[in-house]
Image 1 (cartoon, protein in one colour):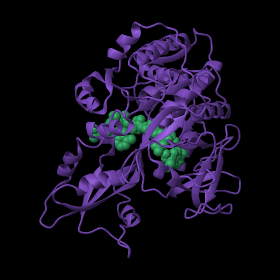
Image 2 (cartoon, rainbow, N blue to C red; image 1 turned 90 degrees about the vertical axis):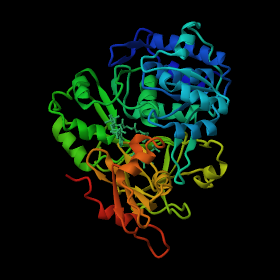
Image 3 (cartoon, helix red, strand yellow; image 1 turned 60 degrees about the horizontal axis):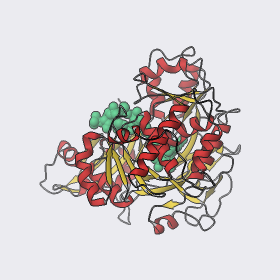
Image 4 (cartoon, helix red, strand yellow; image 1 turned 135 degrees about the horizontal axis):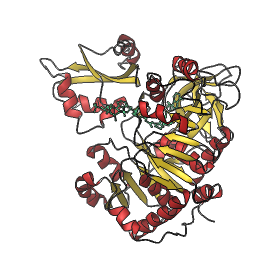
Length: 504
Ligand code: MLC
Ligand code: AMP
């Protein structure tokens, strides 16, 4: 049977001496190195008693070794479970309790704290730092450089990625070998990736965009990447002449446009700029075209589905749209209440079905069935319309979700934290237009009578509990929240009232 996903990477692997990645601190890794070192890590995982289907939870800084660990998990038949490096210990506690990992890989600086939690969860803790050093790599360095990949079929789990839930409880999206392999294969074809491509990789590798869209596509094409620890606009401009393609969230493009050196010449070697994870403003699309001569290719996806749609490689890349359903993906606009397909041109719920769509939420059968229609379509929570030419437009969200700099933030999680504070009667957390992040997290708070709680106190209280990127950029105090006749907070009125909060 083989190992479905890794065999797919192997089938397009170039000669061992070809470069897979080069880092900003001058390290390089060839495809041959990748094979040998992921084999060593796979052996190390087996020595830690990892069995097929076991979860390996990973909260580590971006490094080549972190990518190798992902591949080692695939090869060892384990389920890779990446976690945002910004997550607090409180947040991690939930993930460990829910996923019950066999192994937790973390930064040495966190191993003492995580060690205590891991013991309770029955997991073993090993370390890996941003330079690729740690107890895991020590152990791996003593292993053989060849490995007989553990057999895994198309439907076996390759990864679980947690995605925040509307009720505040995160849900683990279960992604199979075929979900990942099929999507990467389709994207390689649609975006014309070849082994000659050099991708600037400046995204985090704990979410779908940086891990699967960027890394899997590079591996599936036998291409290479300039692997950046984090996004630095000035540096990216200096790398453009050495690359052929860039993938980013809209904030990347907004920030790059502010750089002096960005022009047609600087972007002359690039054949493709891709944007996704959040809406790219039509004005950014236009400004980019004027500055570099390139039309950014916008695509649409989500953790649960990988990529669903893409603007065309050849043909018009229409600003403000996410293009056409990818080959193999069925996409319909449906009545949100009953899933009945709506006529072309009407706004409704975007629903998708295909080999890219996940199998369900980890140990949450009710939540899974609530988000699938009987005929297998997944209810994305995004509202859209298909225009007369077939382009999909995302016009809003049926879910109460904020996307800031490409990260998802569910208001409910913050509202629960803020409402629990002494001196707070209630709160509503909203996303407000933000020039850098797209949406800025904003807390609208009603104090209890006589309370003098301040914004700084509120932010201080949530500091150790929720990741920093989720923190409100501003807290505003009001006497009461607007409600409709049903008593529901009218967030649309709040969004309107504060729409200029971040405009300078
Ligand atoms: C960082 N900060 C953010 C933030 N990122 N605040 C709000 N929104 C964000 N996205 C805060 C930090 O907490 C910190 O706060 C301060 O900004 C500076 O931190 P930093 O690390 O220096 O930030 P910076 O490097 O500037 O990061 C911005 C960014 C980054 C846009 C480069 O957020 C990023 O890489 N975003 C990409 C996210 C992504 O990959 N999404 C894909 C999800 S998959 P303080 O208070 O400490 O100063 C998906 C599916 C799909 O959505 O379709 O792709
Ligand atoms: P996540 O759960 O982090 O994977 O985020 C997925 C969500 O990001 C989707 O449901 C959309 O709301 C949003 N998204 C992704 N790509 C785009 C895009 N190109 N335009 C608008 N929204 C997007």
